[in-house]
Length: 266
Ligand code: SF4
Image 1: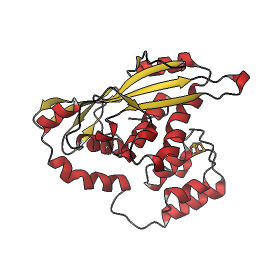
Image 2: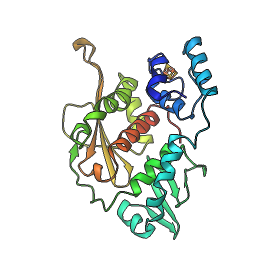
Image 3: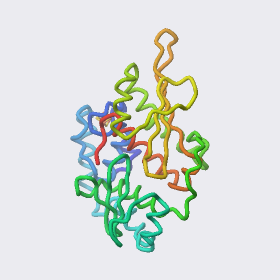
């Protein structure tokens, strides 16, 4: 099978979202890990679709998707967790000795050392389980500091700046441009609380992606007369890097943007 980058080159690159993923690159990553079918993109050219199907038919049996492999590699860390200590450190509840209850993106998840289950009782997509396990495996994080930083202030974020802007902030800005009422309604649905953070933004809302992972969304609406496009900034608590590695911070941001704009899934 092709890599995500090779697949991306064949896609329309319009980020239209019709495949259920907010960006063509996100869709390419899902195709590369066999989480989607070329038929899920209705605007792909016939030749691209044919090339992708042919590559998929020729792929060698693999020991699992990259996500499944990542989940397996996390197992030693997960097995070593003391759930009582983990619950206290991460703001989770101990449902019983072997099960944690954790709020993630305003929904309740149950976590055992074997699996994660979402609000419906079903296992979420693998990258959600990886995010949650990565979060709970971080060693001794401090309490949130109550001090906001930009994504580019996070150590080692420079290689991910474009992904954060393009797949997270721009997705939200484009979707809600000219419609602050819809943004506020969506924020409320995801547990966002209006913030009195001072500045020139048109809307500010604070979220808890995890109980100890606050995020502040600032939205600046488009100003047609000044040719100013809508912009969005997601600020993180200064302690965010103690709660997730940089790749997971971006994946979590993408998942939030996808859910907030209506394209997400559990
Ligand atoms: S459907 Fe998905 S992959 Fe296809 S163009 Fe739209 S966003 Fe890109």
